[in-house]
Image 1 (cartoon, rainbow, N blue to C red):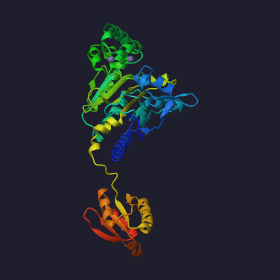
Image 2 (image 1 turned 90 degrees about the horizontal axis):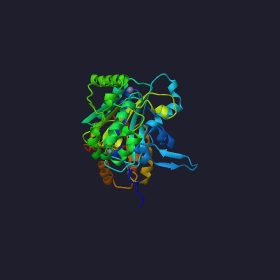
Image 3 (image 1 turned 90 degrees about the vertical axis):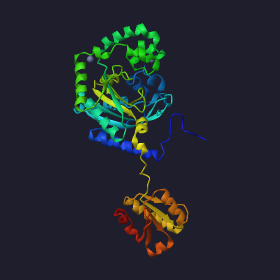
Image 4 (image 1 turned 180 degrees about the vertical axis):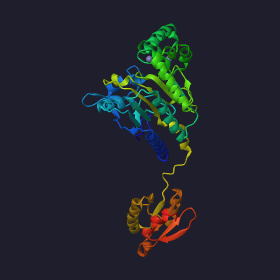
Length: 417
Ligand SMILES: [Zn+2]
Ligand SMILES: [Zn+2]
């Protein structure tokens, strides 16, 4: 038997109804904050991610689904969303518009990670990006909307971690200091960290390995090296959070795994997943557009793993209601089925959630199935009923039954029987 590929999975009903609810809530919240949806292709040229995500990241080095197309062009299934959003912004010359651009995306991403709890090789992200503003208030506002979203879907006990990683002006001074500190303790770090010591020392701070943590904790903090504009930006950002009563913890090691981040970085973690497992990651990436060959463009955004959020969401406990029919149409016999299916068409056109039974069965068996499906009402369509034009409509809650004509069915259902 052919099975789904390891690291992928089917989202079946009724779980898919939970996904629908979470996605609907996301769209509602993002929409009231002025974000519109963007849909970018699921595959792009490999170069976009190699440049945009950074060749030294685990994503690009080990985890991308990259393949040659039939014309030998190298393509990659998108491992994240930001690079594509910025590519689209540049490609459609949206920087000419004086307004800031606020978009969100929702969809599958692809990374060949080791499978673990709540992680998949095809996984789903919700992300939002604000392009064209470097105001720290917009950063606080994005975090505010994330809190509203997590709150609405019932994800509690979250913690906001924040940091600033400076800019191209002040970071080099920190990196020199970091490199000196690293050269003294390099042999106590993992193999990946030792490689990063040379290629991208900042990312040593981001190492998730348990053994590296005590060493990393004693490394110098970037916050002591911020220049005046970066320090001011960070202080204002924290001030905007405080004014919103949003609690946070400053974590100087928080640098994010991607190369293009500048200034503000943040994560939202959940106690339900453990400290190393961020629910949301985000930050400012003013350098990305130039890395992709475009105009300098200020950017800020986040990405959130939907699998993890849904795992923690109390929505998962609620019974799915989407699948319960208002009306179960029970035809008795083949000629009745033909007419009944046309009646069902009319009910559905009028917005009634209607289950049409196609299996030949007795009335008793039809009622049993209607009960199992938690149908609100059952309409019995037999040959006698078709002759008289009067159909038994049964309310399942209390078993009450009335005779109605075809045209009365919808108004009866809408007016509570
Ligand atoms: Zn700076
Ligand atoms: Zn390490």
